[in-house]
Image (cartoon, rainbow, N blue to C red; front, side, top):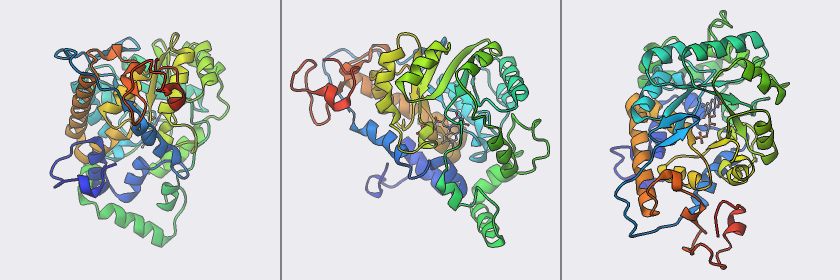
Length: 415
Ligand SMILES: Cc1cc2nc3c(=O)[nH]c(=O)nc-3n(C[C@H](O)[C@H](O)[C@H](O)COP(=O)(O)O)c2cc1C
């Protein structure tokens, strides 16, 4: 997080966190809080970041780092960087047709974009605006017929990867949304306060509320034709999440999907094994950005054991707290195949649209290049636990004093 002392003159954004600050100024409070906030006391959201900042990279020198390879093959797709823009519901409320803008920026940077079930722009709108394949994220809904229709639409759009989000059997409460009156009926004073929040952000008003219409869930319009407002849509969506879903439903999804299936929202080794047994192609170690069950583990802390358990059978990705190229290098060193970026792109698109996302991705690329070069590694694929050291020390691998296993509780860091 950037504090006032390091913000300089604030003339140009340098990092994903700078885009957070720009988004905070640009967005109505209720929307910024929806994007930035997390569940309950927001401890896990904080832990996602703190766990990254505890990890230390191992600097190496004199190793000819003139040629670097940052590309990756993820679930059969060649990416210029091991990054995927994570599914963000309601993104189109942050910037005008935000999903399209982000998908275009992703295409330019050679990374994948993942369209959420609850996007503002429909699958077809994103398809028409881009040429690169994009991924589709599914919530299995009570209405299986509609779920099947969504899968057919994503297949018709050529989506190679289905991201099946499994950590939303019930919804975690986000208290910022409650305080902003997003979750219930409001008295007149409350309605006026919320209207004032929107009206006092004229740039957002013009860009999104006026020019960014229709502000409806593009993929669900046919399912809820009577919904006239976002809260009405949201009520329908909330009622559709299916708490009965189990691993056997993966077989049903498989029957209706020809491409790869990536299970998103796994934190536990036993669940990872179940995902492998149920036939997933990969999984995303994720706590939904701390937006579901607060107090669960930081994703980066959960990652190494899951890689140890299923990394030989599944492609293991991670998300949660990734805000810089250095974070990405740390995650790959701990065994992730790639990272998903959630809020990082949400902030950037809210602040500067497509150009913001493109810039944020170029910053991440540069950060990854520098981190790789100064760790003495020339190929991302060669990153492993040897690129990390114990906090506060620069110990040789194998140094008995390092105690790195105990420090991190992981076996990915080699002795
Ligand atoms: C505003 C917002 C909306 C989200 N909507 C979805 C969604 O529709 N589907 C989904 O699978 N995950 C959703 N997520 C979770 C992200 O895909 C991702 O797991 C998380 O943001 C990663 O953490 P990070 O924001 O710290 O990068 C959402 C996250 C945010 C912040």
